Image (cartoon, rainbow, N blue to C red; front, top):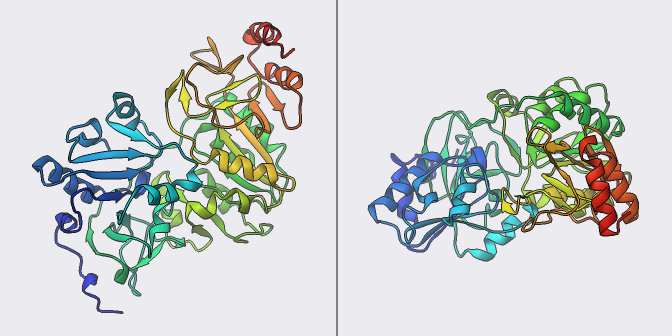
Length: 430
């Protein structure tokens, strides 16, 4: 093994401060890839007044910190590319900024906004060849390998994964060791409506299809409903616990995929320790940069590519508001448009948008005549293919406005169909 001076980790996370100048930009992986000890050191430096004009760029932060709430506005601030339950109230309060984006383009957006950024990431310890793995992440950070400075936080509990997320010790400014449990996302409870929606979708997925699914109760229910399928492939941004069962049963093997044949491909993982243990040194799974994984041009070349994503509300034209709720920002676009566009152009491709028909104990319909004032359209009416609720599947591709409105009203909750029909008539849709 090379005897690089970097092979010996720094004694303290504060060592990272030597590589941060005034007005520096810091790039942090999303979710469980955050280097918690390094961020603690940076927050402490901001509190002491040692930082000036430093900006953190990150999607989906999972750790609440004072700087997110505007504690040191001239020293350390946060630019988000997707709001989490942590950053959502901070954005509403004006202490966090949000860059609208498609996930596939986050790397290029960060490159555009930064000059000589320092990428800080959690990683597995170096192997005998001197290579770290970014573990549960590749996302936008892996695209910076060889193009930006890196400082790593090696965590012995981080799974060593394969794909395009390895970096050699000679390519980094330094590293520290911090053993801690990874952030986990417990599988949500799956109810009867989730299983019903999953059944509608599973019936329409052919053997040999290549799948993309999100996180949540409905995607987990879909994974359960696919247990009798054969030769499925997975090319998805998020790897979650539902994948483990399908791989262990041999349902997912990727033998009919065009890209990365026989491999499951994702760009980050978030789930339980069971998932992380399954990923450790598992050569059947590869994590690639989101620029590759979410590229609609690549997805379009897969046959029978199936995209499954959730939304918050759908209007009678088929427009999906997936990132705002009642006119206020809730998350961001993520990869929804990337995958929907890929499915649209795939031979035999299908794009499913899923949601429960109501909210607030049935009192509010999530199929609406018009989106709420201030709601952002995440997925255009021209791209939406199939909208699925517990009441059925609305097929929208190549349909007229009249046909769309009828199909969407048919999958709304029966208690709200008369109101929707009246509103559609008034709008001239029916």
